[in-house]
Length: 597
Image 1: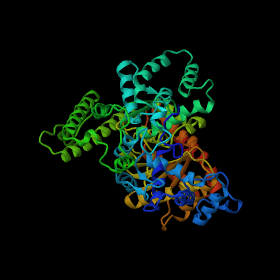
Image 2: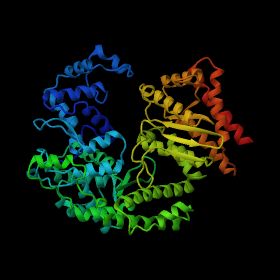
Image 3: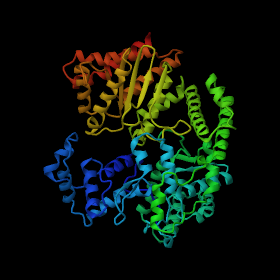
């Protein structure tokens, strides 16, 4: 038997939109072999796919990533690969878009269509949770399009619903709620038939009680694949697919994903604030695949944005959802002594009995925002001046291997938490999308800074990256300078800075920031960009730890003085290399001055 999967081609959900954007260029054309090849060539042109073999005469396009790749060049690069079945490459790349209901692009099935759901995803004007809940509910095996995951091969599953049923039964049966990363990776990608749910709950108990976990996993792989000696690749697939599936599932906001420590194994459970919606979904769908009379019926289903029906489509259900949210929020406020303003109190005491469905939908949206705001307030109350948490962050920033295990959004969260601990801001606003617990489900969108910081005497943005390659300057410098310029214009009454943090900062990145400071970006105004390695940022935070232990604080004015020292150093040195070499000394002198005062 084989595991089910969303995609082995586009394993990062964030990349799907760009694949869909390229497919949009071919909308209205037949997805014949010619256009299957053309789609893959367009992916090469738009740098969404990098083939293994690059012709030497075209290597400059990859050595100089700012160069636009002409379509004819992309075609030549594709032809240079000499694939046995060239059209198959395009079919594989479009497969996840079809699976998730974003497109209809299949040979001999009319012209390429971007569905209403797909177009909603492309516009950017959408709730990411709604889009992926709809798309993942459409995902099922078998379906009239699928030959690989057929009923004859044992498939009968709506994966999202089967996983929710499985986790719910685990929570009902065991004191230890939810699933570890290993448990999820073993039992969810292999949950190919809803009839396996009860068996898998029993298997989970055996796994938890087993002393030799590796032996259990090996024997489980023998059973699942029905072979005597499963390969290392087959076993690793459990974990690779499990992590991939988790990333898609959590985008629905119906799952809570937590980590015990930075970079440790994650744990997944049903999101508590969605308890009522999950219960309603479980009552409606048992985890089995829906039946369709024909391929045409299936195509109509995946094209229809109103299908499948959600609990929120029914007025009685949305009333239950709203009341459950109000009850949960009131309990949270009471148990954490969170002060509430008049507007929030009015929202929590609204009478929904005579409200229309549209009005209740709006109230639910406001309640969800309030829920996140309260949880963020509770988090800030925990973080402010928290020396122990700050020490954990400093240790992480100095552990290069641990940092590399973080996802981009986790790294953004670490830095945002550190800035909150400093506790001298008007507001720290991280721009990554969050789940109902305020935890990031993806990194900040490309058209906004990662983090925005507002202080009494100045404002700042913070941009972070895990990229340390020679491509760092390509992917980071221009967006960072553009974000800062837009931020400067928006908040022109105060000084604006940009703190840029990476494990290592490439020389080309430093050069472009140097030019921006010396000569300005997109205008005459010189920018104020402060590049720091994670080690240098750790020194800044370590200074705060020392001050807190002395009963003192680090003010935003103190931080600004460091920023100014680094920026004005550009007037004293000959070039960017000498400038960057001065950072350790500047930071040490700043630190020593604060400690002895």
